Image 1 (cartoon, rainbow, N blue to C red):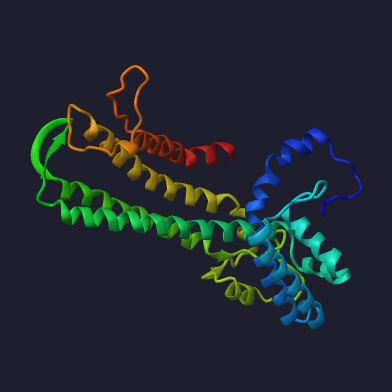
Image 2: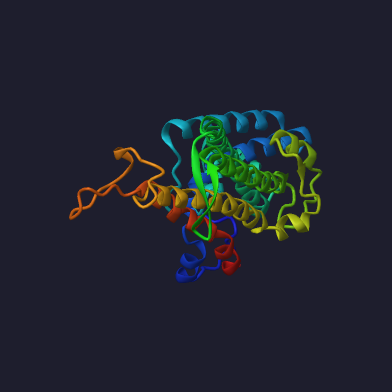
Length: 310
C-alpha cells in the first residue's frame, strides 16, 4: 500500500533501489510515529478538524498499539510500504473511516521528519546518560589516583612527571566539550517540523504550537520550506557531535592499549577483559580497547559519509 501511488506502476528495480533498507529501519521509528500521530490527532480535535468521538477512538487505538509494541514488537506487513502506512492501515482496519482521518492536514514529508527527530532526540538522551556515567567514573578515578605518578610524554618521549589523576581528569574534561556539541545538536533537533506538510504548509486551520508543546519540542521550524529543506542537516549535525565523542573515546582506548603494553606496564587489565594467542599463550591482548577504537573510527567517519551521500 503506497499513499503516493497514482495508478502508474513504478519500475521494480528503481523502487527497490529507492527504498533500500527503509522497511527495516522504519521499525525503529514505530513508537515515535505513534506518538506523533497521537499529538496530531489531539490537535485535529482541538481545531475541529475531526470530531471528538473520532478523536477518542483514534487516541485509544494508538495508545493500545503503542503499548503492544513494548510486549510484541512491531511488524510491517508484506505489501505495506512503510511504518506510516502500517500504522494508518491498522487504524483503518479497527476504526474504518475514522482511522483514515489521522492523515488529515499532514504529509508523508513532515511525518518522516517528525519521526526521525523524535527518534534522534531519544537516542541523544541515551548517549548523554551513559556518557554521564563514564564522566563520573573518570572524575572519581582522577581524585583517587591524583598522587599516583605517571610519566608525561611528548612525541612519545618521556618529558615531565605527571599522574594518573591528571590523565583521568583530562578525558573527563574532554567529555564535557563533547557534551556541549551534543547539546547543540539536541537543540537543533528539538524543533517541531509537523505542520510543514510537503514543504509549503497546510490550508487547514492547524495549530502547530499545540503539537510543539504536546511533543515536548523547545520550538518549531517556523519556516515550512526550511523544515523540508533542512532534511539531512539534523542528521549531519548529530553525526559531527557523535564523531567528537568518538574521538575522545578512541584516544583514551589507544592510551589504554599503550599503557597495558609490557614496554610501558602502567596498566594491568583483568584477564577476563583480554584474549590470548594460539601460539603465544602468555599474551593478554587488550581487545576491549582495540574494539572501542575500531568502532569509534567508524563513528568518526559518519559526517563524511553523510556528505558524500548527499
